[in-house]
Length: 388
View 1 (cartoon, helix red, strand yellow):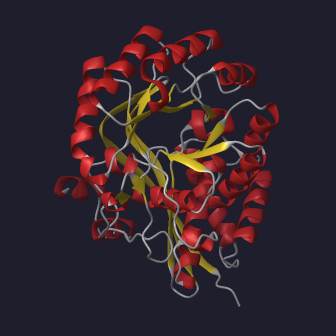
View 2 (view 1 turned 45 degrees about the horizontal axis):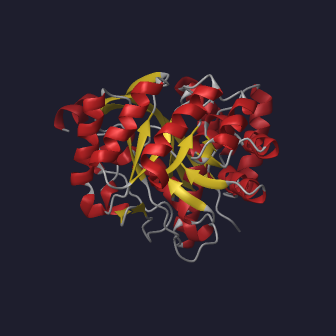
């Protein structure tokens, strides 16, 4: 008889970022996330994390918290079966009249974590992989002044050389001249490969094509891919850029849900897709999205939001178990926070330029003592902040 869910609790988790992080349409100063603790009737705990972001995941923190809290009532006493859990969550979406992709992702991660612990296997083995497949990870530089960008790239190259860093991701602003200078200047101080992410900042596909041709002329095959140059709803514009760009174009915001991935594939609108657990609804749907993408001949990458090491560990396990992965962008736990909510150091999983999972059961993480005490109500957040 399979284990059952005894309890599922959700916590609001706001964590200040080390420094402001800017992309083309937003500046982040805080990660406004949700943390899930699932307990089975056998006393095994599973952890999950949601990182909602309305323009990307379609939900807010309040919506995610409400969805998870309501789902908890529906899931208590139910078997710890991924298919059953997601069927119940789909029913709940219909009953409520709204859903939460990041809320589903948080519950999904906690279920996989608990299942892995019950079976004594890391999640990537639950997904059918005997050994993890390596795909290089990028470290991201948000939109800064040109000089600050160059200095950050120089610092990354030095600080993360011993971890085998080979790729940096640059956010683009939508200003062609500025973006061209940004990319060229970074290529002069960082000898590795580059990926670009426009976050929909080029509304005119012709401008996007022109800038991508210029940067390719300057740097060439060191440019691995560019994400979402055009508005997410305009698949025709995305397709136009993808067909003419010398750099492979990956859909990100256009490929949020499983249904979106199918639309991108059918429209032949991109060379690849960026799968994020937060926007697709967890590992369960990420596996399905990857299958659909591969069937259509699309390449794959895995990205993240403002996530701690818990959610990133889930994404790492998914990424290394998934064929066709050419790149990952799993760096928020390394770059964004001064505090770690896990006992493990995130950098332990940054090996030879890739993010690799631990061989521990489940997601391979345990919570820091201070964070456990916080969840148990033994200490207040202000005390953690002062001592941290």
